[in-house]
Image 1 (cartoon, one colour):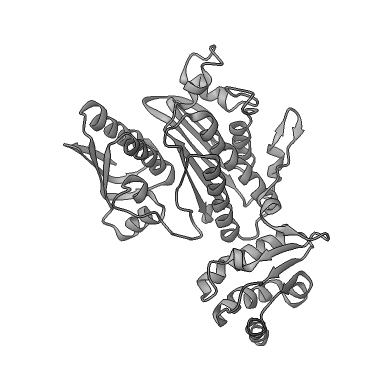
Image 2 (spheres, rainbow, N blue to C red; image 1 turned 135 degrees about the horizontal axis):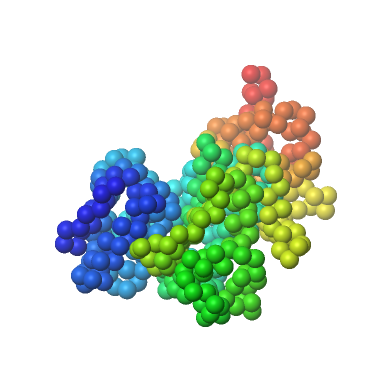
Length: 411
């Protein structure tokens, strides 16, 4: 990849990968701090590939510049696919808040990058991510969703409680379907891991030692705020699932993979703030909750299913269709709903899911088929009848659902 500067313009050509991201950030720092420009142009027109970790790093730096009164403008990649990625992933808006609107993209591969600066915004961001994961993943174990929720909560919570970032943090989640991995990236523009740990741990002599200490059990700058298990537990989850874990902060980079083990290296160009990129595999039949063992005791966190859905006394889960569906007129609206239902049925073990259609006055025939017709086929007649209840359904809507199921039965 080539990075060049001319005046206040920085051009990025080729593939933006981990090894080159530091050069982009260094060029941005040089234009704003060394040369004193108060407006910056990032030209990605010749960029051919970009990945979430590197782009979150660029985006959070741009958010800091906006906060400090530096204008940033973006030139999108000329390649149509790359241009859509920049806009769908919300990178375009986070870099150039004046020119580009926030992304409204909903897909199965990634969630738009979300910004959070308060506890409420963090809670909402994590819930949005879990909702997308629930609709995107297939045949997923509840334990897997539970530990992913725990890890994302812990790492984003670190931004709120420890980073002292004036712009909060950014979080993005990507579903790498071919590799059966979920990647989440969290970045901030705060004081960094070394700056957070050193006041309470003066024995730390280098940024490399600070990152090594940060992933150990029970290490935190202040026990009154947290127990210091977030980075440690997330690293253990990545190892257990045969994924990967990367932590950048200050003059150090930590990376853990199945092939190379744990490596901590010095960086010539510092990362201002903290960037965490974690991949969690979900193809292997392993108990990821075994990674959450603290002080010799297994920790089972409360999860999204417990807090988001109502349950009957017999363990049946109530699925409020009006709340869970963004529309009722197309197959595109019905597909994520069916995926959610399949996952929840899997999470409920042998229990029932009660689909509550209260307030749903009309659905299209294609929507009825996409949700209920295809669900009937995937579960089979006996399993569908035993495990799916439909209640509070309008007479017309009931007729459309029955017709969709009948037509599927005749195929």
